[in-house]
Image 1 (cartoon, rainbow, N blue to C red):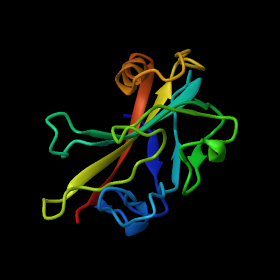
Image 2 (cartoon, rainbow, N blue to C red; image 1 turned 90 degrees about the vertical axis):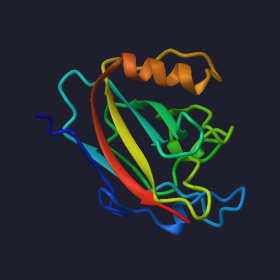
Image 3 (spheres, rainbow, N blue to C red; image 1 turned 180 degrees about the horizontal axis):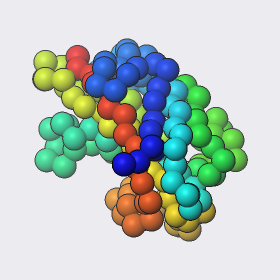
Length: 164
């Protein structure tokens, strides 16, 4: 039983995300603002963190990766609302972002096709056993995720729901 958990002051697990979180492209009308996240209870030996945001319900045959953030310093236990811009200036000195499935770097909010059933957006914080993944710049997100999973000691998840 792990005490590793992630929460958000903006939504509870299995509750609806807000319009402000929705992607601001395609036909999305949101502000593409990431929700604030806080985590605690990482296991001993944690040397860094990674964060992924995944929609398993996207009609792609393989889901949709909305955010991949890694090499977060082990002293960081929260992210403010709105971090994850393409230029990463809001991350400070901690964290590297991979390209998401929108083809952009940073946070890409939910934007499920209109009229489909509610999608799940799974925020996963990975406690990592290495201080850095040591990946080349612009590594494909599948390679980044592979390395995240290879070095994960424990995970904590928080699922938001969204439909349009």
